[in-house]
View 1 (tube, helix red, strand yellow):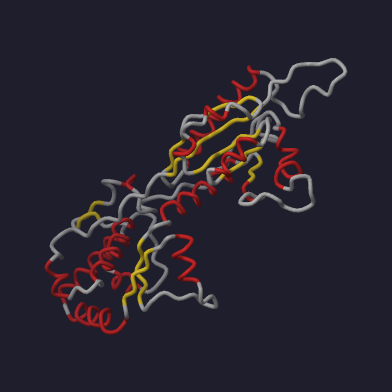
View 2: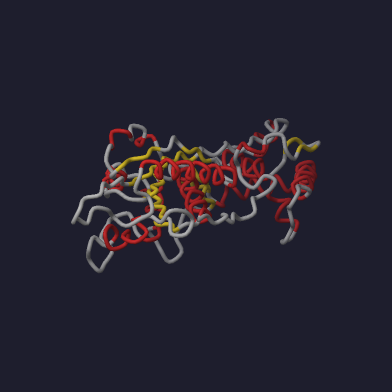
Length: 318
């Protein structure tokens, strides 16, 4: 039995700073879109690092640099299953809808088709590595490329917890997919909580994995988790500009935590005198003001772009 996945409507026209929109949104002002809009911010960040307005004007003839394309999320799909053999007077098989090699092969085809649907629907860069099917949860030696993955997508039809334990050992984020109604029911649909997450207790007992990492049937639920992991990958180790200095509202340790957990390189730009002097000089330059208005016109003319604030905010952003 199969349910048709319902994906959210894809984002259109330069929704992100990725390279998948090359060539779109051309205007007489150069390629001005959300991607180059973010590039403007990065360019401005460089400018604030001690440059004068005259120094900025010297580089103004060049096209606004584009934000770099996001790094794709590399995902390793893994199917775990069992092929039990009948034994008289024994409890010889686990619960679930996959128990033969033929059924496992059919499931591999089903998974491949779903991965393609996810890849097509994704509004972020994602790469699926080759699917590996592991009978009885063993044969971990087949996962030679797992260390190269950013995350693991485990289809837990059956088998043991060895794959999940290996992912934890390698510190890989894991999405555990279990079928209930979208295909042959998975063993781990029944036992993922008591057997693994709670470890036969009444409380969550696995560090780094909880019920939020488990998806039942829904490809939409897989999609948004992958989107979040892609965002995480592209955030860790980034350099950001903190105008006026970093701080945390009601959390004084926020800047330190951001540096520690997300490895952010936070560049402080003081309001006075650096930023104030640049703003004053820019606002006094009529050519710069006119250019900013033209760029704002081009940006607001992009398809599916709606202005819901004061236009001046957009103009001053350029």
